[in-house]
Amino acid sequence: MAADTRFWHPFALMAQVRSNEFIITRGDGAYVWDSDGKRYFDATASLWCVLVGHGRDEIVDAAAAQMRELASYSAFGAFATTPAVTLAERVAGYADGIVEDPRVFFGLGGGDAIDTAAKLARRYFHAIGQPERMHLIGRTQGYHGTHGLGTSIGGIPVNQEGMGPLDPSTSHVAWDDLGALEAEFERVGPDRVAAVFAEPVIGAGGVHRVPASYLQGVQELCRRHGALFIADCVIAAFGRMGTMLGVDRFGLQPDMITFAKGITSGYLPLGGVVIGGNVAAPFWEGDGLWFRHGQTYSGHPTACAAAHANLDILESDGLLDRGIELEQEITTAFDTLTGARLVGDVRTGIGALAAVAFDKAALAEHPDIPMRVFAQAKARGVLTRALGDAVAISPALVATREDIEHAATAIGEAAAAVAADLGVG
Ligand SMILES: Cc1ncc(COP(=O)(O)O)c(C=O)c1O
Image 1: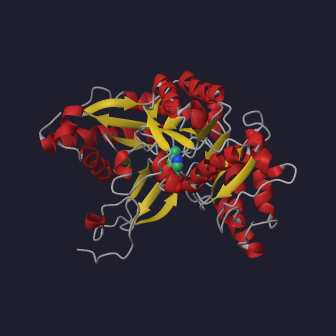
Image 2: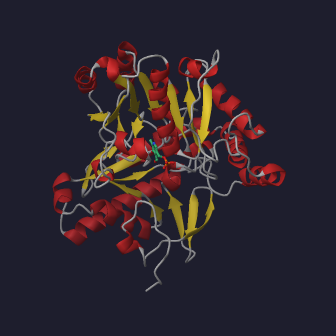
Image 3: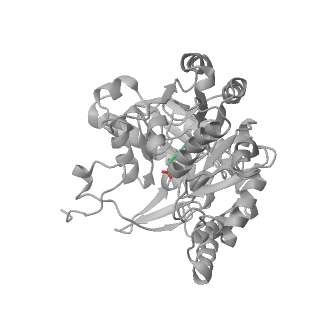
Protein backbone atom coordinates (compact mmCIF):
# COMPACT_ATOMS: atom_id res chain seq x y z
CA MET A 1 0.00 0.00 0.00
CA ALA A 2 1.25 3.50 -0.81
CA ALA A 3 2.41 5.67 2.09
CA ASP A 4 -0.18 8.04 3.47
CA THR A 5 -0.22 11.48 1.94
CA ARG A 6 0.05 14.78 3.82
CA PHE A 7 -1.98 16.51 1.10
CA TRP A 8 -5.59 17.15 2.17
CA HIS A 9 -7.44 16.99 -1.14
CA PRO A 10 -10.36 19.31 -1.89
CA PHE A 11 -13.80 17.63 -2.05
CA ALA A 12 -12.36 14.28 -1.01
CA LEU A 13 -13.12 11.46 1.41
CA MET A 14 -9.61 11.50 2.87
CA ALA A 15 -10.19 8.27 4.82
CA GLN A 16 -10.15 6.56 1.42
CA VAL A 17 -7.89 8.91 -0.51
CA ARG A 18 -5.11 9.14 2.10
CA SER A 19 -3.37 6.06 0.76
CA ASN A 20 -4.97 6.02 -2.65
CA GLU A 21 -4.00 9.18 -4.52
CA PHE A 22 -4.28 9.25 -8.29
CA ILE A 23 -1.30 11.24 -9.53
CA ILE A 24 -1.53 12.95 -12.91
CA THR A 25 1.92 13.79 -14.23
CA ARG A 26 1.57 15.09 -17.77
CA GLY A 27 -0.92 16.51 -20.24
CA ASP A 28 -1.05 17.05 -23.98
CA GLY A 29 -4.12 18.30 -25.85
CA ALA A 30 -7.18 16.42 -24.61
CA TYR A 31 -5.08 13.68 -22.95
CA VAL A 32 -3.28 13.22 -19.62
CA TRP A 33 -0.96 10.55 -18.23
CA ASP A 34 -0.78 9.13 -14.70
CA SER A 35 2.31 8.28 -12.66
CA ASP A 36 2.31 4.74 -14.09
CA GLY A 37 2.48 6.16 -17.59
CA LYS A 38 -1.12 5.23 -18.44
CA ARG A 39 -2.81 7.58 -20.93
CA TYR A 40 -6.37 8.86 -20.45
CA PHE A 41 -8.80 10.91 -22.50
CA ASP A 42 -9.40 13.82 -20.09
CA ALA A 43 -13.13 14.00 -20.70
CA THR A 44 -13.55 16.59 -17.92
CA ALA A 45 -10.73 18.96 -18.97
CA SER A 46 -9.80 19.08 -15.29
CA LEU A 47 -13.00 20.44 -13.71
CA TRP A 48 -14.35 22.08 -16.91
CA CYS A 49 -11.20 24.23 -17.26
CA VAL A 50 -8.70 23.33 -19.96
CA LEU A 51 -10.55 24.62 -23.02
CA VAL A 52 -7.48 25.01 -25.25
CA GLY A 53 -6.05 21.65 -24.17
CA HIS A 54 -3.03 20.73 -22.09
CA GLY A 55 0.56 21.58 -22.94
CA ARG A 56 0.15 24.82 -24.90
CA ASP A 57 3.61 26.38 -25.13
CA GLU A 58 2.14 29.78 -26.03
CA ILE A 59 0.65 30.10 -22.52
CA VAL A 60 3.78 28.76 -20.84
CA ASP A 61 5.96 31.21 -22.77
CA ALA A 62 3.70 34.18 -22.03
CA ALA A 63 3.68 33.37 -18.31
CA ALA A 64 7.46 32.85 -18.24
CA ALA A 65 8.09 36.13 -20.07
CA GLN A 66 5.85 37.99 -17.63
CA MET A 67 7.53 36.34 -14.64
CA ARG A 68 10.93 37.46 -15.89
CA GLU A 69 9.66 41.01 -16.33
CA LEU A 70 7.51 41.32 -13.20
CA ALA A 71 6.10 38.12 -11.72
CA SER A 72 3.76 39.61 -9.18
CA TYR A 73 2.56 42.93 -7.91
CA SER A 74 -0.46 44.05 -5.95
CA ALA A 75 -3.20 46.15 -7.55
CA PHE A 76 -4.50 47.69 -4.33
CA GLY A 77 -5.25 51.40 -4.49
CA ALA A 78 -3.77 53.04 -7.58
CA PHE A 79 -1.25 50.28 -8.30
CA ALA A 80 -1.69 48.27 -11.48
CA THR A 81 0.24 46.14 -13.92
CA THR A 82 -0.10 46.27 -17.68
CA PRO A 83 -1.45 42.71 -18.12
CA ALA A 84 -4.24 43.40 -15.61
CA VAL A 85 -5.24 46.68 -17.27
CA THR A 86 -5.19 45.25 -20.79
CA LEU A 87 -7.00 42.06 -19.77
CA ALA A 88 -9.77 44.11 -18.14
CA GLU A 89 -10.05 46.09 -21.38
CA ARG A 90 -10.19 42.87 -23.42
CA VAL A 91 -12.85 41.20 -21.26
CA ALA A 92 -14.87 44.45 -21.20
CA GLY A 93 -14.67 44.37 -25.00
CA TYR A 94 -16.17 40.88 -25.06
CA ALA A 95 -18.97 42.15 -22.80
CA ASP A 96 -19.74 45.10 -25.05
CA GLY A 97 -23.46 45.06 -25.90
CA ILE A 98 -24.08 42.45 -23.19
CA VAL A 99 -23.26 44.31 -19.98
CA GLU A 100 -23.81 48.05 -20.04
CA ASP A 101 -20.53 50.06 -19.84
CA PRO A 102 -18.63 47.13 -18.27
CA ARG A 103 -15.86 47.18 -15.62
CA VAL A 104 -13.87 44.12 -14.59
CA PHE A 105 -12.82 43.03 -11.08
CA PHE A 106 -10.29 40.18 -10.79
CA GLY A 107 -9.80 37.49 -8.15
CA LEU A 108 -8.28 34.02 -8.08
CA GLY A 109 -11.12 31.81 -9.20
CA GLY A 110 -14.85 31.21 -9.32
CA GLY A 111 -15.46 31.30 -5.57
CA ASP A 112 -13.75 34.67 -5.30
CA ALA A 113 -15.82 35.95 -8.20
CA ILE A 114 -19.09 34.86 -6.59
CA ASP A 115 -18.31 36.39 -3.21
CA THR A 116 -17.15 39.57 -4.93
CA ALA A 117 -20.40 39.80 -6.90
CA ALA A 118 -22.54 39.03 -3.83
CA LYS A 119 -20.78 41.59 -1.62
CA LEU A 120 -20.83 44.16 -4.38
CA ALA A 121 -24.57 43.68 -4.95
CA ARG A 122 -25.23 44.37 -1.28
CA ARG A 123 -22.73 47.21 -1.08
CA TYR A 124 -24.28 48.80 -4.18
CA PHE A 125 -27.79 48.87 -2.73
CA HIS A 126 -26.46 50.19 0.56
CA ALA A 127 -24.69 52.94 -1.41
CA ILE A 128 -27.78 54.00 -3.31
CA GLY A 129 -29.95 54.27 -0.19
CA GLN A 130 -31.68 50.86 -0.31
CA PRO A 131 -29.89 49.12 2.60
CA GLU A 132 -32.84 46.76 3.10
CA ARG A 133 -31.98 45.08 -0.23
CA MET A 134 -29.62 42.41 1.12
CA HIS A 135 -31.29 39.13 0.18
CA LEU A 136 -29.56 36.82 -2.31
CA ILE A 137 -31.47 34.09 -4.16
CA GLY A 138 -29.87 30.99 -5.64
CA ARG A 139 -31.29 27.86 -7.28
CA THR A 140 -31.51 24.25 -6.17
CA GLN A 141 -28.65 22.23 -7.73
CA GLY A 142 -26.76 25.51 -8.26
CA TYR A 143 -23.05 25.53 -7.43
CA HIS A 144 -21.30 28.80 -6.71
CA GLY A 145 -18.05 27.77 -5.03
CA THR A 146 -17.21 27.22 -1.39
CA HIS A 147 -16.49 30.68 0.00
CA GLY A 148 -18.78 32.17 2.64
CA LEU A 149 -21.56 33.58 0.51
CA GLY A 150 -21.12 31.04 -2.29
CA THR A 151 -21.69 28.24 0.23
CA SER A 152 -24.95 29.90 1.26
CA ILE A 153 -26.15 30.67 -2.27
CA GLY A 154 -25.29 27.21 -3.60
CA GLY A 155 -28.18 24.77 -3.82
CA ILE A 156 -26.50 21.41 -3.18
CA PRO A 157 -27.40 20.64 0.46
CA VAL A 158 -24.50 18.22 1.17
CA ASN A 159 -22.09 21.10 0.58
CA GLN A 160 -23.71 23.01 3.46
CA GLU A 161 -23.98 20.14 5.92
CA GLY A 162 -22.39 20.88 9.28
CA MET A 163 -20.97 24.21 8.15
CA GLY A 164 -22.81 26.13 10.87
CA PRO A 165 -25.27 28.94 10.27
CA LEU A 166 -25.39 30.00 6.65
CA ASP A 167 -25.94 33.60 5.64
CA PRO A 168 -29.47 34.36 6.90
CA SER A 169 -30.36 36.59 3.94
CA THR A 170 -30.13 33.89 1.31
CA SER A 171 -32.59 31.34 -0.06
CA HIS A 172 -33.12 28.96 -2.96
CA VAL A 173 -35.80 28.31 -5.55
CA ALA A 174 -36.32 25.28 -7.78
CA TRP A 175 -33.75 25.53 -10.58
CA ASP A 176 -36.26 25.40 -13.45
CA ASP A 177 -39.34 27.14 -12.06
CA LEU A 178 -40.00 30.81 -12.83
CA GLY A 179 -43.20 30.76 -10.80
CA ALA A 180 -41.17 29.70 -7.74
CA LEU A 181 -38.84 32.66 -8.26
CA GLU A 182 -41.75 35.05 -8.58
CA ALA A 183 -43.24 33.61 -5.36
CA GLU A 184 -39.87 33.95 -3.60
CA PHE A 185 -39.68 37.63 -4.53
CA GLU A 186 -43.12 38.03 -2.93
CA ARG A 187 -42.19 36.00 0.16
CA VAL A 188 -38.97 37.90 0.82
CA GLY A 189 -40.44 41.23 -0.24
CA PRO A 190 -39.51 42.45 -3.73
CA ASP A 191 -37.72 45.50 -2.33
CA ARG A 192 -35.53 43.33 -0.08
CA VAL A 193 -33.93 41.23 -2.83
CA ALA A 194 -30.46 42.38 -3.89
CA ALA A 195 -29.68 39.75 -6.50
CA VAL A 196 -30.51 36.44 -8.12
CA PHE A 197 -27.65 34.10 -9.07
CA ALA A 198 -28.08 31.69 -11.97
CA GLU A 199 -25.77 29.44 -13.96
CA PRO A 200 -26.86 29.38 -17.63
CA VAL A 201 -26.39 25.59 -17.52
CA ILE A 202 -26.19 24.04 -14.05
CA GLY A 203 -22.81 22.31 -13.98
CA ALA A 204 -21.60 20.71 -10.75
CA GLY A 205 -25.24 20.16 -9.73
CA GLY A 206 -25.50 17.50 -12.46
CA VAL A 207 -25.59 19.30 -15.87
CA HIS A 208 -29.17 20.59 -15.97
CA ARG A 209 -30.33 22.75 -18.83
CA VAL A 210 -33.17 25.23 -19.01
CA PRO A 211 -34.61 26.92 -22.08
CA ALA A 212 -33.32 30.40 -22.90
CA SER A 213 -36.84 31.63 -22.12
CA TYR A 214 -36.41 30.56 -18.47
CA LEU A 215 -33.16 32.51 -18.14
CA GLN A 216 -34.68 35.52 -19.87
CA GLY A 217 -37.61 35.21 -17.46
CA VAL A 218 -35.22 35.32 -14.47
CA GLN A 219 -33.64 38.46 -15.92
CA GLU A 220 -37.07 39.99 -16.51
CA LEU A 221 -38.22 39.28 -12.93
CA CYS A 222 -35.03 40.86 -11.58
CA ARG A 223 -35.55 43.96 -13.71
CA ARG A 224 -39.21 44.22 -12.72
CA HIS A 225 -38.38 44.00 -9.01
CA GLY A 226 -35.27 46.20 -9.15
CA ALA A 227 -32.88 43.35 -8.18
CA LEU A 228 -29.59 42.55 -9.91
CA PHE A 229 -29.31 39.55 -12.21
CA ILE A 230 -25.94 37.83 -11.76
CA ALA A 231 -25.05 35.19 -14.35
CA ASP A 232 -22.51 32.70 -13.00
CA CYS A 233 -20.53 31.85 -16.11
CA VAL A 234 -17.58 30.24 -14.33
CA ILE A 235 -18.17 27.15 -16.49
CA ALA A 236 -20.10 28.74 -19.37
CA ALA A 237 -17.67 31.49 -20.42
CA PHE A 238 -14.81 31.32 -22.92
CA GLY A 239 -16.12 28.65 -25.23
CA ARG A 240 -17.98 25.95 -23.32
CA MET A 241 -21.25 27.37 -24.75
CA GLY A 242 -19.62 28.12 -28.10
CA THR A 243 -19.57 31.84 -27.31
CA MET A 244 -17.17 34.13 -25.52
CA LEU A 245 -19.12 34.82 -22.34
CA GLY A 246 -21.74 32.06 -22.25
CA VAL A 247 -24.68 34.39 -21.62
CA ASP A 248 -24.49 35.59 -25.24
CA ARG A 249 -25.71 32.14 -26.26
CA PHE A 250 -28.99 32.86 -24.47
CA GLY A 251 -29.48 36.52 -25.40
CA LEU A 252 -29.02 37.65 -21.78
CA GLN A 253 -27.89 41.03 -20.52
CA PRO A 254 -27.02 40.52 -16.86
CA ASP A 255 -25.93 43.19 -14.41
CA MET A 256 -22.87 41.11 -13.52
CA ILE A 257 -21.13 38.07 -15.00
CA THR A 258 -18.81 35.90 -12.93
CA PHE A 259 -16.06 34.04 -14.77
CA ALA A 260 -12.93 31.93 -13.98
CA LYS A 261 -11.64 28.57 -15.29
CA GLY A 262 -11.66 29.13 -19.08
CA ILE A 263 -10.10 32.59 -18.91
CA THR A 264 -6.71 30.89 -18.45
CA SER A 265 -7.86 27.37 -19.39
CA GLY A 266 -6.81 26.65 -15.81
CA TYR A 267 -3.11 27.22 -16.52
CA LEU A 268 -2.98 29.73 -13.67
CA PRO A 269 -5.63 30.64 -11.09
CA LEU A 270 -7.73 33.60 -12.21
CA GLY A 271 -11.37 34.63 -12.06
CA GLY A 272 -13.38 37.79 -11.93
CA VAL A 273 -16.60 39.69 -12.36
CA VAL A 274 -17.83 41.84 -15.24
CA ILE A 275 -19.84 44.64 -13.64
CA GLY A 276 -22.31 46.97 -15.31
CA GLY A 277 -21.70 50.72 -15.27
CA ASN A 278 -24.88 51.32 -13.28
CA VAL A 279 -23.56 49.18 -10.42
CA ALA A 280 -20.11 50.75 -10.71
CA ALA A 281 -21.42 54.34 -10.71
CA PRO A 282 -21.64 54.98 -6.93
CA PHE A 283 -18.02 53.85 -6.59
CA TRP A 284 -16.57 55.37 -9.76
CA GLU A 285 -18.46 58.66 -10.16
CA GLY A 286 -18.21 61.97 -8.27
CA ASP A 287 -16.37 61.61 -4.97
CA GLY A 288 -17.06 57.86 -5.17
CA LEU A 289 -17.16 55.26 -2.42
CA TRP A 290 -14.71 52.58 -1.35
CA PHE A 291 -15.32 48.95 -2.16
CA ARG A 292 -13.17 47.47 0.60
CA HIS A 293 -12.77 44.10 -0.98
CA GLY A 294 -10.11 42.26 -3.00
CA GLN A 295 -7.32 39.76 -2.69
CA THR A 296 -3.54 40.01 -2.55
CA TYR A 297 -3.47 38.39 -5.98
CA SER A 298 -6.35 40.35 -7.61
CA GLY A 299 -5.14 41.22 -11.09
CA HIS A 300 -2.02 39.04 -10.74
CA PRO A 301 0.13 39.98 -13.76
CA THR A 302 1.41 36.48 -14.55
CA ALA A 303 -2.11 35.02 -14.43
CA CYS A 304 -3.35 37.89 -16.62
CA ALA A 305 -0.53 37.32 -19.14
CA ALA A 306 -1.48 33.63 -19.28
CA ALA A 307 -5.10 34.64 -19.85
CA HIS A 308 -4.14 36.82 -22.82
CA ALA A 309 -2.21 33.95 -24.42
CA ASN A 310 -5.11 31.57 -23.78
CA LEU A 311 -7.64 33.99 -25.30
CA ASP A 312 -5.33 34.47 -28.30
CA ILE A 313 -5.50 30.71 -28.88
CA LEU A 314 -9.28 30.59 -28.45
CA GLU A 315 -9.60 33.31 -31.07
CA SER A 316 -6.91 32.25 -33.56
CA ASP A 317 -7.81 28.54 -33.48
CA GLY A 318 -11.54 29.18 -33.93
CA LEU A 319 -12.33 27.30 -30.74
CA LEU A 320 -15.68 29.02 -30.13
CA ASP A 321 -16.98 27.53 -33.38
CA ARG A 322 -15.40 24.25 -32.37
CA GLY A 323 -17.44 24.46 -29.14
CA ILE A 324 -20.66 24.48 -31.19
CA GLU A 325 -19.48 21.54 -33.32
CA LEU A 326 -18.46 19.64 -30.23
CA GLU A 327 -21.90 20.20 -28.71
CA GLN A 328 -23.38 18.44 -31.75
CA GLU A 329 -20.84 15.64 -31.63
CA ILE A 330 -21.42 15.11 -27.90
CA THR A 331 -25.19 15.09 -28.38
CA THR A 332 -24.98 12.57 -31.24
CA ALA A 333 -22.57 10.25 -29.42
CA PHE A 334 -24.13 10.41 -25.97
CA ASP A 335 -27.77 10.21 -27.02
CA THR A 336 -27.01 6.66 -28.20
CA LEU A 337 -26.69 5.75 -24.50
CA THR A 338 -30.38 6.45 -23.90
CA GLY A 339 -31.97 3.16 -22.91
CA ALA A 340 -28.60 1.46 -22.29
CA ARG A 341 -28.19 -0.77 -19.26
CA LEU A 342 -28.32 1.18 -15.97
CA VAL A 343 -28.62 4.50 -17.82
CA GLY A 344 -31.47 6.87 -16.88
CA ASP A 345 -31.44 10.42 -18.15
CA VAL A 346 -28.86 11.47 -20.80
CA ARG A 347 -28.33 15.23 -20.47
CA THR A 348 -27.07 16.72 -23.72
CA GLY A 349 -28.08 19.55 -26.00
CA ILE A 350 -26.55 22.90 -25.05
CA GLY A 351 -22.82 23.40 -24.68
CA ALA A 352 -19.78 21.17 -24.91
CA LEU A 353 -20.76 19.14 -21.86
CA ALA A 354 -23.00 16.23 -20.96
CA ALA A 355 -24.07 14.00 -18.11
CA VAL A 356 -25.22 10.43 -18.06
CA ALA A 357 -27.54 9.88 -15.09
CA PHE A 358 -28.35 6.42 -13.79
CA ASP A 359 -31.50 4.49 -13.16
CA LYS A 360 -33.29 5.96 -10.12
CA ALA A 361 -34.27 2.63 -8.55
CA ALA A 362 -30.72 1.28 -8.87
CA LEU A 363 -29.31 4.54 -7.40
CA ALA A 364 -31.67 4.31 -4.44
CA GLU A 365 -30.16 0.90 -3.65
CA HIS A 366 -26.56 1.79 -4.61
CA PRO A 367 -25.89 5.54 -4.33
CA ASP A 368 -22.24 4.91 -5.24
CA ILE A 369 -23.09 3.93 -8.84
CA PRO A 370 -21.64 7.16 -10.32
CA MET A 371 -18.32 6.53 -8.49
CA ARG A 372 -18.32 2.93 -9.69
CA VAL A 373 -18.95 4.01 -13.28
CA PHE A 374 -16.21 6.62 -12.95
CA ALA A 375 -13.80 3.85 -11.85
CA GLN A 376 -14.83 1.54 -14.69
CA ALA A 377 -14.51 4.31 -17.28
CA LYS A 378 -11.11 5.21 -15.85
CA ALA A 379 -10.01 1.60 -16.25
CA ARG A 380 -11.02 2.02 -19.92
CA GLY A 381 -8.83 5.12 -20.26
CA VAL A 382 -11.50 7.83 -19.91
CA LEU A 383 -11.63 10.33 -17.04
CA THR A 384 -15.18 11.42 -16.23
CA ARG A 385 -16.58 13.11 -13.12
CA ALA A 386 -19.10 11.58 -10.74
CA LEU A 387 -21.71 14.25 -9.92
CA GLY A 388 -24.76 13.39 -7.82
CA ASP A 389 -26.80 10.88 -9.82
CA ALA A 390 -24.57 11.00 -12.91
CA VAL A 391 -21.15 11.04 -14.48
CA ALA A 392 -20.34 14.17 -16.46
CA ILE A 393 -18.00 15.11 -19.26
CA SER A 394 -16.74 18.56 -20.32
CA PRO A 395 -13.77 17.96 -22.63
CA ALA A 396 -11.23 20.39 -24.01
CA LEU A 397 -12.47 22.10 -27.17
CA VAL A 398 -9.58 20.46 -29.01
CA ALA A 399 -11.09 17.00 -28.41
CA THR A 400 -12.02 15.20 -31.62
CA ARG A 401 -15.23 13.45 -32.66
CA GLU A 402 -13.40 10.14 -32.20
CA ASP A 403 -12.45 11.11 -28.64
CA ILE A 404 -16.09 11.84 -27.86
CA GLU A 405 -17.31 8.59 -29.40
CA HIS A 406 -14.67 6.72 -27.44
CA ALA A 407 -15.84 8.41 -24.21
CA ALA A 408 -19.50 7.55 -24.88
CA THR A 409 -18.60 3.92 -25.62
CA ALA A 410 -16.42 3.67 -22.50
CA ILE A 411 -19.19 5.11 -20.29
CA GLY A 412 -21.75 2.71 -21.79
CA GLU A 413 -19.43 -0.26 -21.17
CA ALA A 414 -18.62 1.04 -17.69
CA ALA A 415 -22.33 1.28 -16.79
CA ALA A 416 -22.94 -2.24 -18.10
CA ALA A 417 -20.01 -3.58 -16.07
CA VAL A 418 -21.32 -1.91 -12.90
CA ALA A 419 -24.82 -3.25 -13.58
CA ALA A 420 -23.39 -6.76 -13.93
CA ASP A 421 -21.29 -6.40 -10.74
CA LEU A 422 -24.28 -5.24 -8.71
CA GLY A 423 -26.85 -7.39 -10.43
CA VAL A 424 -29.06 -4.36 -11.21
CA GLY A 425 -30.28 -2.37 -14.21
C1 LIG B 1 -20.73 27.75 -11.76
C2 LIG B 1 -19.58 27.77 -10.80
N1 LIG B 1 -19.41 28.83 -10.00
C3 LIG B 1 -18.39 28.91 -9.14
C4 LIG B 1 -17.47 27.90 -9.05
C5 LIG B 1 -16.34 27.99 -8.06
O1 LIG B 1 -15.12 28.15 -8.71
P1 LIG B 1 -13.74 27.85 -7.93
O2 LIG B 1 -13.70 26.38 -7.72
O3 LIG B 1 -12.70 28.37 -8.87
O4 LIG B 1 -13.77 28.61 -6.66
C6 LIG B 1 -17.59 26.79 -9.86
C7 LIG B 1 -16.61 25.68 -9.80
O5 LIG B 1 -16.77 24.64 -10.42
C8 LIG B 1 -18.68 26.71 -10.76
O6 LIG B 1 -18.86 25.63 -11.53
